[in-house]
Image (cartoon, rainbow, N blue to C red; front, side, top):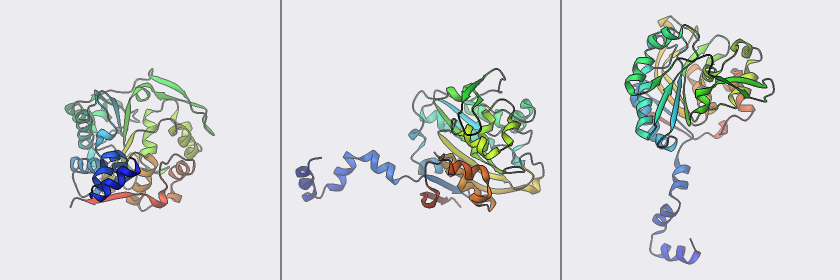
Length: 298
């Protein structure tokens, strides 16, 4: 806009409207938060409100996209025991992706227990298929070696369907972990890693950071509807489950994980793998001045 034109618009009292017409996307982006925390709602309500406050899923999903949703399906547990991602949340997300224009939505996880039982008893397979997703068990011959070139990891096999996706949405459940204190977004990505994952647990924080740097998702949505507060990651005792009715969303996995520490009363310095990921530059935003929108639906 030329200065003369700006002054003419100003004299007519139209500066605000003119700026919006010239710079709508820039102004909109500046107004959006870097993360959203929504609480006191059911899974579908939490997701709908979080996406609305974050500018809509169409910010990230384009028409014709092949989308991978990566929940935690790792354990042979029903949803009530909070060892796996809430199936209603997964289904709602599948529908939202389809509505945003996704051509295909795939769901898979490299499970720790028997995959058939995990997919069935978590109820993720049933709910996701009903919502229109392709739910597939991970095949051992579909991993591709990726050059990591990290400090401790030089290469690692990653699931090919994950690598081929146009967009990836990481949907971990927030829960306690006996080794890493918590398992959230960064650790949930182990479900697309092949090879001997036990090797990652030596110098875990740095190795996970090395690999995750190459496979960070488009969005991370932390399911904290129910959280597992003790005896994770497997759980099994209803007394260890807390109904938190919360969802955290960000396009930065480190940011989402950092915020979720609040659910467990933890600080960044107390969780090595999240701290290391932050220190090594995996975060998009400085945690000292995060722009977080917090909403209670209750």
